[in-house]
Image 1 (tube, protein in one colour):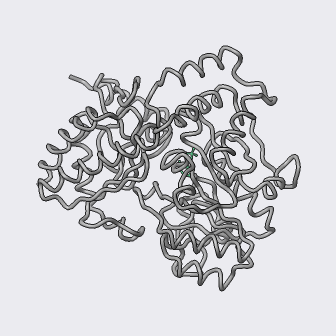
Image 2 (image 1 turned 180 degrees about the vertical axis):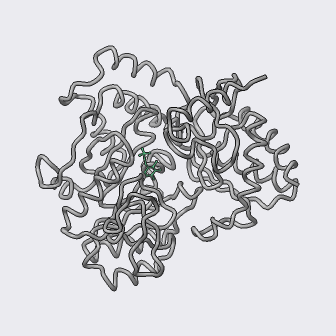
Image 3 (image 1 turned 90 degrees about the vertical axis):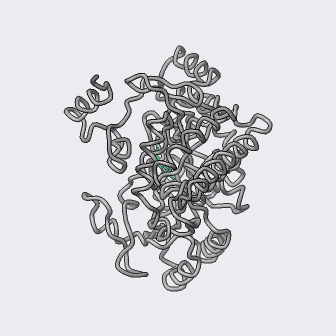
Length: 427
Ligand SMILES: *Cc1c(COP(=O)(O)O)cnc(C)c1O
């Protein structure tokens, strides 16, 4: 029997590079044929061969209330019926800005855009424009979208400027980006001592979700906050993934640290393209039309996408929403740990709010370097065994996973049953 997924993948590769519109979807890291999704509901989606999967990606985070939630679908349909886009302001954009400012107290003013990449790129430009400095600091393993200045990896040594990680990024861009080690406050101290007056901003994922899940240590983020304040640099928390995902107030509420700017995305669009950047009003006033930092977007604050985002942000404010989400995610990682232990597999797992990481190694990784020592081959075999059993994990050993409010105990039990078999096949 021919697989519709295979047929679609063959066809897709004729008209689209690699057959996908975003690289990780191509299954290159785990091998095999990507699943083409036809529909989704609650904690499930179905592929072109009508196989049902328990989904632990949730569109890489946005589907926090579960797929096709009736409130979100209704909000989108009603907004669409009133017109798709006007290129003029709407009241819904004010509602969303007010709600974001209320839920994330470090944000005094916010601007809506259409992707996390665009939001992070704009926040960098704002930080550079407001400080009059060029240099930015980022950390190895953090992802902030694919703006040129951010596709940079560490140079040959500390205090050497970065190298592009992508063809097409001029060395001249990379030379303004310094790439440091995550969770190394001493390195940050040294860099600020040497060149603090040239640093426009430090950008960080306060809970990293793009090198698998990696928690920042409080000491790391506290040092960052103190050094940025001392040296007049802008502290940017990229909470595109962690925002409204690890807690109602984002990672900054868990660590009790106020960044100067915050970048948001994923959950705030509820599955449609909405992202945002915001923070201190005295910084935000540098943006056009008030100030000299240019930034714009034809579809920014689009009425349909904002409606989806607002419906989602309403649902996550339900009493107990994050308590329940965190409890289910914790139960998930504990159940997987038990299943792995029973088979004697080197494995550990971690969860923060509705986000989790699976690590094929004995101990919890605490840095990018230790994360890279996870057994990728074991993950890939586990991934395919889970996929065959109807559980869809992120198709890479170095991506985080996501739980939705629709992942109830029965869904977790079905996941554990699949995991017991998948782990035993690894022996
Ligand atoms: C997903 C992500 C981005 C990029 O967002 P897009 O909407 O894919 O452009 C930026 N930063 C972080 C932390 C992300 O997880």
